Image 1 (cartoon, rainbow, N blue to C red):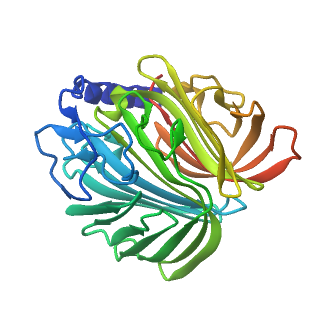
Image 2 (cartoon, rainbow, N blue to C red; image 1 turned 90 degrees about the vertical axis):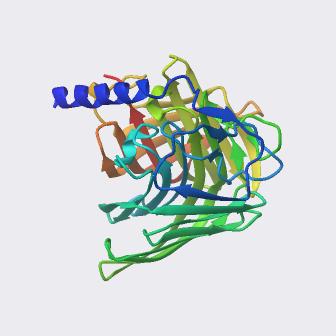
Length: 370
């Protein structure tokens, strides 16, 4: 097992070497409202945006997708008991740009995770082409040949993911009605701010929290539940493994609060963090300092030899000076791919001197060092 882990890490290091120093990408102003992605990544420079505009928060930020760049759109829902959930990831990345795509030739793929009472069905679907249109801060997209698409309103108040895939025997819709304003790593969705969560990696979160309805049919069985939804996007102008050494990310509903947290170590050895809190449709804080996401009983920074955590301790200081303190207990392991995990968990915590609140969350991790 240890030899296998070293082989995986070595492969990641080799892939990162192909990423170069970002010479295959140049900065770009606001991108076009309609973009088509090819299934074959071209050998040409990408235009990449890392500074926000007045709109386009959920629009494509990398055009075209070449051998070392990537852009993806992510959606998930977690049930209040953290035993059921769904995740859809619309990925535009070569195997060098994002090696976890498991997609050596085709640069377009979609990941599907459907968890029902602790049991998960996972699918990876290849696409022959993709189209993304944007209006306001919203977007809509279609990954051809997968039966997967999403539609979003310009004001990002509602998104709907639709699926009709015979290979997975999966069909239906997942609806996201936003309850919290969107944000960038360190600010609300305003123009002229950095969209980088860490160097060379962008992050835009247009739906930090939503009241979601899952209405799917999987292999002839009905999968219906309500939960806490989320939608964001990430992109980069360098290979993911050349930038990220480790990361913990998560979102959830804690009593009346919407929470998003991020804690990553870059390959430069520096720690990059973000903490977001909203209530009653208003952002209370979105900060890039004073955030801590730590695995309970494990090392930080994490290594592959540490094993998977079963609990986390999360804290960050609000702009008001109050502190958010949250304990997460993992209930369901959605996926375990050695270098990356995906979990559903329950949360308990306080905001300042508030009463103890409870809730549920989705988390994921990448650990790329031994």
